[in-house]
Length: 256
Image 1 (cartoon, helix red, strand yellow):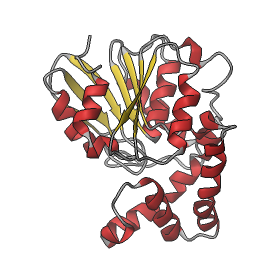
Image 2: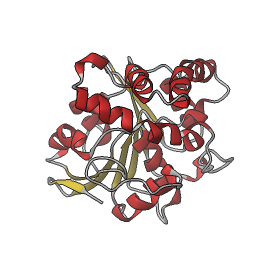
Image 3: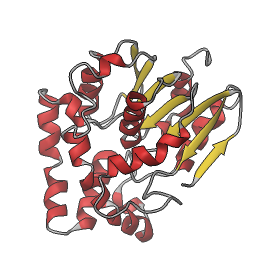
Image 4: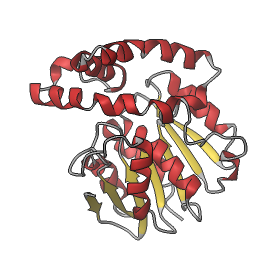
C-alpha cells in the first residue's frame, strides 16, 4: 500500500483520509502538527496510488485489514469520514488502544439510528441510491458531491475529475452494510464502552446535519470523549481548517 510520511516531531500519528480522497489531503494538517508529530498517511485501498479493492470483498474489511499493520503501539490515530469509521474499528480491534483517537465527521450513520436526523438523511440519500441502481453513476456522483463535497460545485471540477468520481460510486454504494447497518458490530452493546483511550470528535458547524446525531450517538457511550465544533467549516474540515483540526488532534496544548 502506498503511504506518505510527513516528517516532524516525536509523536506519531496515523491519519486515514475520507472516501474518494487520498493521503495528500493531510498535508496542511501535518504541516501544523510538524513541531510535535510525524504523520503517516496511507492511501486507502482503491484510492490514490494503492491497489484496487478485490472483487466480492467487503470494503470495510479490506480497508481495515490493509491499514492494521500501520498502527503501532503508542501511535495517535486520526480518521476523516469513511476513514474515521475505519479508525474506530482499528481502535476497537487493536490489542492495546491507540494513544488517542480523533474521529473527524465519522459517517457511521448507524450511530444516529432512531433520531429524526437519521431519517431525514436517509431520505436525502435516496436520490443517490436511485441513480446508482439505474446505472447513472455520473448523476449519483453529482448528488454525492452536492451533499458531501463542501463548497465546490459539480461544474467546478474538470471532466477527468468528474469521471473519476463517477467511477468510485460502486465503492460508496458498497459501504452501506458497514456504515448504515453496522455489519461489523462496532455499535454492539458494551463495545464502545471498552475503549479507554481519549477520543476527540471533530465536526464542522456547517456540515451535513446527520453528523451531529452521529457524534451524539457515539459520545454517550465513550468513556473519555470531547466533541469539538469548528466554526465556519463543513464536512471537508481537514482541508479548509487545518490549523483548527491540528489543534484539536493535539489536544490544544500538544501531545502527551
